[in-house]
Length: 108
Length: 118
Image 1 (cartoon, rainbow over the protein chains, first blue to last red):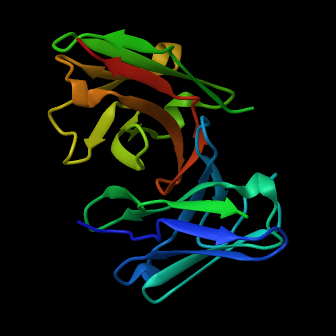
Image 2 (cartoon, rainbow over the protein chains, first blue to last red):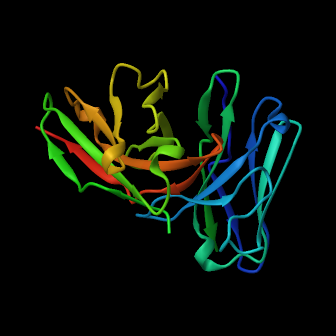
Image 3 (cartoon, one colour):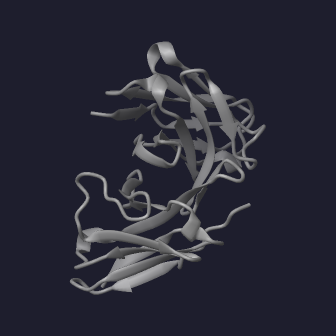
């Protein structure tokens, strides 16, 4: 089955840039989607189709995808960005949805 | 406005059965797949399965096939997740979500916490 690997944690100072990676075999050939989950809340879609943002999501959130790694970038990080982030793909070969292992972003 | 409203928290004993619900509103319920996602305490998101309420076509993750049943009643715009015999390891938060273009989980319910304890 398809596996998505994320770093367990990323720490960043306010105002700096956080980059969260999502590794998978030839992930560049798939569409990658990202979710933010704050403590005690349901996940929220922040990036879809590699780099598009749903309405209401700040431009500070952006995404890219190439080769074996997709990346979610959070620019000008704010305290309110502290959350868990998950990548996700639909694996067409198995017709399964796959979530990444999740990354906890800590704002120092 | 698209909304998915899930049923309330449940506390059950091992061996008991349970059916939780997810009611959609603000869109054509029969035109979008609904997915179920498990989150065990302190852990990540796991895809369980999906249903297309228009014709009740259902798919399961291999990890959950035979462990749960997903169904839907399109007349009341509600999807369900049910267990016939709960285990302590079923203790988790369960989310439903509307899937867009078969690719991603666009809108999420608020979650239903299921606690299984003797």
